[in-house]
Amino acid sequence: MDRNVRIIGVPMDLGADRRGVDMGPSAIRYAGLAESIEGLGVACSDWGDVHVPRPEGSDPDAGAPASGTAKFLAETETVCTRLAHEVADAVADGDFPLVLGGDHSIAIGTAGGVSRDAETGIVWFDAHGDFNTPATTPSGNVHGMGLAAILGKGPFADTDWAPAPNVAEENVALVGLRSVDAAERPNIRNSDVTAYTMTDIDARGVTEVVTEALDVATDGTDGVHVSLDLDWLDPTEAPGVGTPERGGVSYREAHAAMELISERAADPGRLASMELVEVNPILDRHNQTAELGVELAASALGKVIL
Ligand SMILES: NC(=[NH2+])NCCC[C@H](N)C(=O)O
Ligand SMILES: [Mn+2]
Ligand SMILES: [Mn+2]
Image: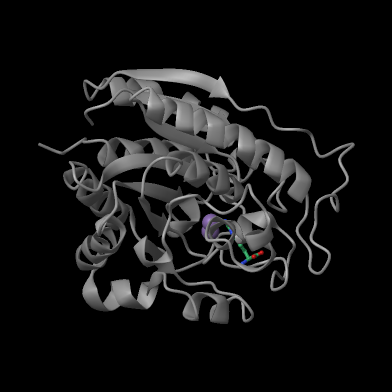
């Protein structure tokens, strides 16, 4: 990593059903994130947390579109707008934003900030598509809608805060899909994002799939945002997540993917930003999932075995 890393925490849990994911940033810091980055010879500064309102006293239906459901959408807008400013500031200062969630709804803020003045591709590592809209969501949870919001799908098209300013659908790759809701499936199929399921990884291996995903995200863009939902990994490796799904990638496959990202982190199409989301310490075992997040971030930022 050729830039200073700027850590930005977002203790957000309003986009998910399971409380506790708001403690993710603390758990990841406690697992030694800054020390691990500095150990690579990369300068690192921790800018603390973006303020997140408490759910108590908030009206979950405020801000929801006229048709459909999206819980705490008004608060999500506030948090993501703040985060987008923080991320855009970091980029303008020449720093590399490393965002710690929080639930995956915060990706709307990260993507909005990093793409403010730059064409940005996204590699979205996730068991889920996060491609629901308020019209198709089975849960009303915005963490299942983040990617659709970034791409301005459904009612998100009519908002000025959700669609990322410079992200083209053609430059978005989903990697590791294995849980897609029935009504979410056509949203993905009818879009121009490239989706790699676990079946693709079974058949072709993680190296080939991630190499191709990076081709998608770097083609004609200024940089790539890596959005890493820890439920991308198998729950045996990452038990501390709110929506675990069996059949995820292994520990070694995850490192292989991050090492590929690091190799491709040079201009053009360089690594622009990264986020670690969905770490829930209440559901974790001895902070295993937060520690894994730290390890994977280090691999993405240049850590090698030898
Ligand atoms: N970022 C996540 N963990 N998303 C899980 C989404 C689960 C489900 N598809 C929903 O929309 O409610
Ligand atoms: Mn997920
Ligand atoms: Mn997700």
